Length: 366
Image 1 (cartoon, rainbow, N blue to C red):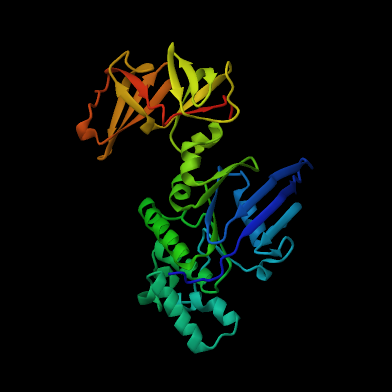
Image 2: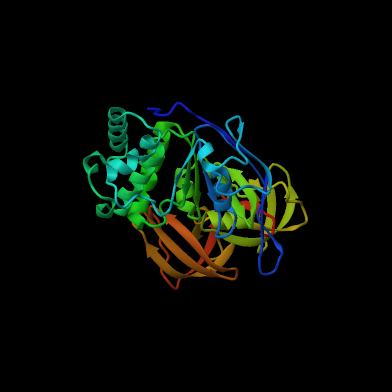
């Protein structure tokens, strides 16, 4: 059910954020020429390593930082230089930000009390919201007596109850353990979809980005390097950097022989037709073949494109991860449904076969 009828787009046009380094007196470009269009009701993740500009971008949308150049629109309104309290946004922080002297009910009710709603209306809306996040039975409890996951739900409820047009989340799960992070990812996505609210989520965790997002915006060194839905970012990255950041991967140097419907490449005197490649790839040039663990299969020596020796096998139940030493370094091969597959023993010689429909040819640069 759509709890929030306000579905609002967010747009950044040629946005820069330049800081002055006080010691060196030089300019630091934290965000460079960011152009982003977020569709109404979508959850979009800003993903990248520390220092890439993702949190600065989020803070500019929130109004905690002002851009050096460019424009920011929430809906049709230019909010570029508006203070945070004049923007129809709400922020969920990494540190929860709950008031320790208030119980759960009063923490969630805080924004409504500032808006001077009647007590009966406040009680009704707070209990409805606590029901949505599954905490109605803890309304009287102090934040200090809640688990990390429960505290984050209270923080989420407090942000949503004011019915903002845009929900901003700054690495909200980084303080939780692995199991709680997994559970809260599901909860955040469920709640965001039930409200139909536009949400922008900052993380450096690729699993969070993949499992939560309608779109992923990958950033590096202040620049947006690729935007797309999770399946495109994972399966069709436009660079070695994106391929490596979004998941486990192996890169093999290849020679591009021909271009057509497929990209014909040569590796170790073997020729393969690869279906997926970037627009920059040209015949006669060097490139790399990107292979995810699930795109490779261990076979008998000499039958694949790359020979090696099994170093380690890790049994994970529904799959086995086989680490194979090759002339191109150690390669991780994922063997799904291992009960029905041959698992080569540690120390055995093998060859690696590549599924041409799952590999991708990329320029040989980051």
